[in-house]
Each structure stands twice: as structure tokens, then as C-alpha cells.
Image 1 (cartoon, helix red, strand yellow):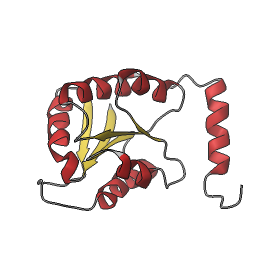
Image 2 (tube, one colour):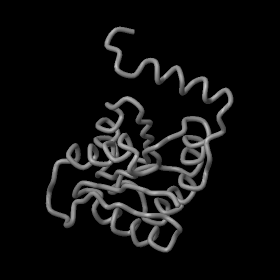
Image 3 (cartoon, one colour):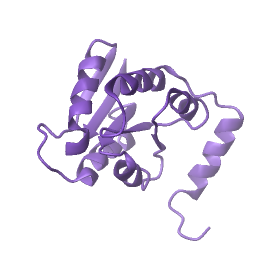
Image 4 (cartoon, rainbow, N blue to C red):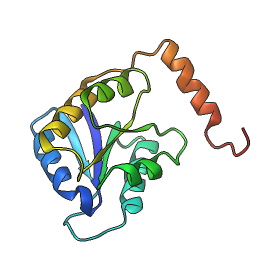
Amino acid sequence: MKKIAIASDHGGYELKKNLIAFLTNSNLVINDFGPTNPDSVDYPDYGVKVVKAILENKVDRGIVICGTGIGMSIVVNRFPGIRGTLCSDLNTAKLCREHNDSNILILGGRVIAKDLAMKIVGIWLNTEFEGGRHQRRIDKINKIDGKVNI
């Protein structure tokens, strides 16, 4: 059974609630890292919680949501081993899993419709990494992680 971490800021709170309801009926364990209400919060605090859960192998993948998705994208991709992908269409959701082995899906709660977000999440969760030539590229990314001078 896959374990999924999810978190948002206030701009993604409503979409997060909808996605949790959508995912509750699936064969997943959902860990909600907050917030617990729509009051204003700082997105880095919540993005880091999901990253930590992934890096500590407490969950398999994560979903983070802020107003546009851009802030969360900047935050989660600061960490070696994280491949966060901001998705707003079905093809990107599929390809980021097949080609990039995305381990965090990033959504913009104020820029994407709820129904489309649910379809994106479904595709992202159910698409496997293809490996092969794509693994070679992930390995190159992993060698870059943490280096200041390239």
C-alpha cells in the first residue's frame, strides 16, 4: 500500500481538502501534514514537512499545493533526492512519472480546477517510472545534487 504525504499553504488548503476526500477511497495511506485550517501560513514550512517524510522513507511520494504551485516548487526542489514537478495538465502528470520519477507532485490551488487536479493526481499516482535511459538521466541529476560548482 502506497503512503502519500500531502500538505499545502492557505492558497492550496481547499484543493488539499478535496484531494484528501478523493484519495480516501483509494488503496493509499494519506498523511496530512497541514495546515488544519485556511488561515494564512508560510508555504516553506509545509513543503519541508513533505520533503522530510520522503527523505526519511516514511512515505513513498508527496503532494504539495500552494496558490500557484511555484513557491512549493522552489522549496521542495532545494533538497537532494527530490524531484518535484509542477503539473497543470494530464500529459505532464504522466511524463513526469515515466521519465523523471517524480516523487512530489506540485499543484497550484488557485490556478487549477478541482476536477482537473483530481485527474492529474490519479494519473501521477498510477504511472510507473520507465527506467532505462531515463534512469541514466536521474543518475546524472543525483550527481549534481548538493554541488555548488558545476
